[in-house]
Length: 294
Ligand SMILES: N[C@@H](CCC[C@H](N)C(=O)O)C(=O)O
Image 1 (cartoon, rainbow, N blue to C red):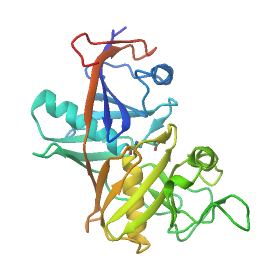
Image 2: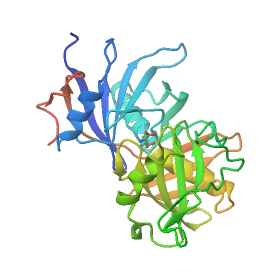
Image 3: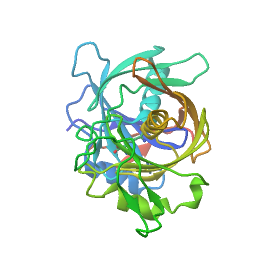
Image 4: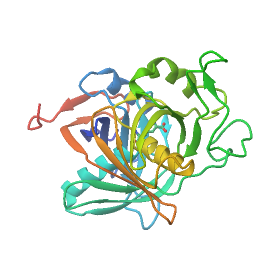
């Protein structure tokens, strides 16, 4: 029994994140603990970023990512920014190399406080995303929702940013779509054997976009960093935008995504600390630090 672990409740432009400090211990945050923390209004979150001791030489830490339904995720751009801010505040260090289920990634805090994460290279192969059946061209896959003759959403682009994404392109207001109703159906559609993150995207210029995301394992969120990356890569691939795009997200925050010529996707944005506490990684029972902000 390793005792309570420290955590910080943070957000990445509204993406609700718990950064759990699991360094120096062998246990993991359980799905039960995640579900219990999410059931409490004070600690409700979209992802837990559990910082573990490094598994691989050359990396600082291994980050285990859990969605609010207790399932694991390979990537979380907004959560990674929160981890960087927490570790930079603790150590004074500005650059970090982490390992996640999706592989090794680099991240850094800039002088203005914004944080960039190198989310790695996108993957477009149907087996890599993965899709349940062969699509030679994943810029537009056959999938629709609503009446057959007049679908509400159709023909998304599919991309892996380490985790699976589908991007539905719309010309009008992203808020005019019932994403709370369609999201669960699309997330669990048989075409996505590992489920998928579902985004509605409106391109407003070659350099700007508005997105809303239904996250796999978390539902509607105020922002999703890997979805922002997937949307920009898919938009650039389909000639809707260039490779450097600013995105407005439902929390009112802004993210910037650059798809570099070396194929790496760089996500930049802010992160914010809310309060700190400690919790039991096996049950989710928690207490707020007394000196922590309300
Ligand atoms: N909010 C995240 C994405 C989290 C993972 C996702 N729900 C999944 O299961 O793939 C982000 O900022 O990237």
